[in-house]
Length: 472
Image (tube, rainbow, N blue to C red; front, top):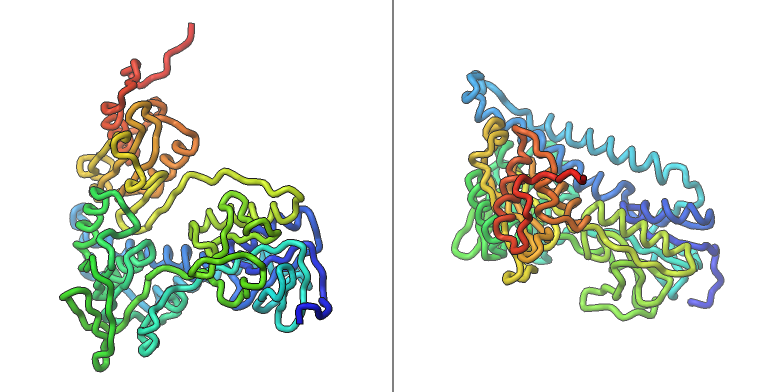
C-alpha cells in the first residue's frame, strides 16, 4: 500500500491550521510556494474559537457586572436595579468570537486555493501522507494538530450535561448551578465569571493548588480571595454520577447536586489520527515522539511538531514561536535551535494570577531571595477598590539577578510582563530599582517588592539612592 503512487509532491506539508500551523506557514511561504496546509475539523484557532478570546469576553462582562457591588463606596446609588440578560451576554461573547475567527481566516486560509486541503491527515510512511484517499509526498512535515479538552470516559454516560470550552460558548443561557472540575487557568476564569453572572458555582480540583501556582504564599492568598466568591474543594478529584435530573458531584466527603459540570481538566494532544507509528520514531506512553524544544524536530527526521500538540507550553505566544521555529527549519537545510522566551502564564481572574520565569518549586531555596508586597496599602490599588493580593519576586541571593515571580495582584497581567521582560534580559533587582516608578500606579507595589528583595541580596548596591550616577 505504501508503494502506491502519490498524487502530489510538496516541499512542506503543514498538518493543522491553528495558531502554530499558521505561524509555520508564514515562515514556509517566504522560502517556497510548493506547500500544503491540511486541516481537519473547524477552521479558526483554538484561541479565537474556544480559548483566549471568548473566555476573556465573558470574563469582561462578569467583571463589569460585579463592579456594581462597590458603587455605594463612591456615592453611586441604584446598583440594586442593575440586571443582566444572560442570553444577550452570551450572544455578545459569540459575536466577538466570530469577529476574531473571521480575522484569522481572512488573513490566512481564505485565499490559499489548492494549497489548502480540508481533511484529516495520517502518515502511511515517514514522508507520505494520506488525506481522504489523496497521497501527498512531503520532503518536510510540520505537525500542528492542536489539542482537545479532556473528559473522563466515565462521564460519557451523561455527556449532554458535561460542558467543555468546545461547547460552553454556544450556550444561549446558563444553568442555575455548575461544578467546575479543574481549577487551572480556564477553570478559574470561567468559574469566577459564572459565579459573578449569578450561577451557583462549586470548584473542584484534585490538587491543593489553583491556577497552576506552586508558590505556597501566593497559592494560599489566591485560595482565600477566590474562595470568598465560590467554594473551592481541593485535594480530591471530582467524581460525577447521575442523580435524577441533576448530577451529583463528590470530592472527598463533600458532594453537591448541580445542573451541569464544566470540565476544565486540561487538554490532550491530537495525536490519535496521525499514524505516528509509521514515521519510524519511538513514542512514549501517551503516543508522543521525542522532540527538541529548541528546534521542534522529531528525532533526526525532517518532521517537526509545534503548538499544543506537543504538550510543552500550551499557550498562544509559545505556539506562535514553536510554529515559526518549525516552519523555518522545514525550509532550511540546516536545522537551527532557538532560545525560548522567559516563561509567562497569566490567569485573567480577579485579581489576576500570574507566574513568571522559574516557578517556586524549581528554585534552589538555599540560593534564592524573595521580595514580597501585599497590595492592601498600595495607593492606586486602594483607589480602584482592588487593594488585595500579594506579589513575590525571586532573585539569586548572591547577585540579585531576577529568577522569577508569582502573584495574585490587581493589574497583574501588566506586572507580569514587566518582570518577564526583565528576566529575559538577565536584569537584576538593582537594575529595576533604577527604573522610573510613577505615583500613584500599581507598579509601586512592584517597587516595594523589589526594595524588600534588595535588602536580602548579598552583593548590595552601594548606590542607595537607586539612581544612575553621571560619569565625569
